Image 1 (cartoon, rainbow, N blue to C red):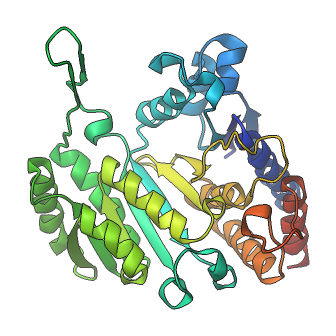
Image 2: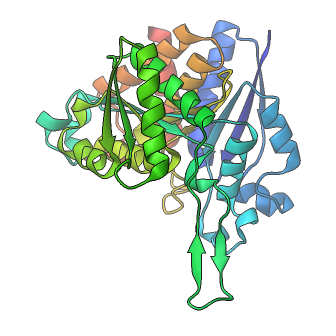
Length: 358
């Protein structure tokens, strides 16, 4: 059965790195005779400039019909003063909510050849391999009521952090099952010392642990977990956290690797349809210079092949090719130690050559 892939390059370097991933995807389709239907559409600020909406209805409809979405990045200074419903970032949050992409998988790994790029010492960071499972459609980002009150003195703003039992159970299930496939360790992160919603989160996750006797469950408070990620990141295997805490921790973990341009992510629904995107943003400061690192986007394609497109062996080929790319000394500007680096547009062909040479 044909699989539908939607390509949403977005804004800034999102367009450049997505072009690299599409180049690899086109090669794979031809090389392995994959039955994929690929559609490219605009989203974010680019879509707003074109039709007055960061997420046109036809794009949302196409997303709902897709098995996998490759999402570049959205945003930029030219759209910063728009109302929230017109901001490029709203397109991303709306896609996550409308597609019920509740599970965000954020791997943070280090190629030891790049340990010099990390802000941490080699002996602390070498062999880093963490998976952060972030709840993506609930919590304080979506909780109601919310608002800004400007008709009272003093003015104030408020948001609501709320999770129900089903939301906690489904994200914990993804985290426990992910830990089963890795080293069997799961750390649940919250603030149960001060937040009722976190106390509830901890109680549900603790209760579920009995269903996974092969997984060692621990708990950490969010502030301590942030500190431990810097002091001793290799103590972690899988981390599960709410939308807010997962957002913060995954960015910390990404920074440890030396370049956020190396790291992919997956956002999945209950049937493993999903949206795949690099962890970096649209980087308007370097957009158009052909120096962005497309490896995170190519790795995101690999994750799409693994989780949503039932092509695990081809996903393995991409992952191996990226590893050999680094081991062979190829570098992009963000991870280069000198001026000898590949341009964005040159990376995909190197990955393809490595795959072909097996």
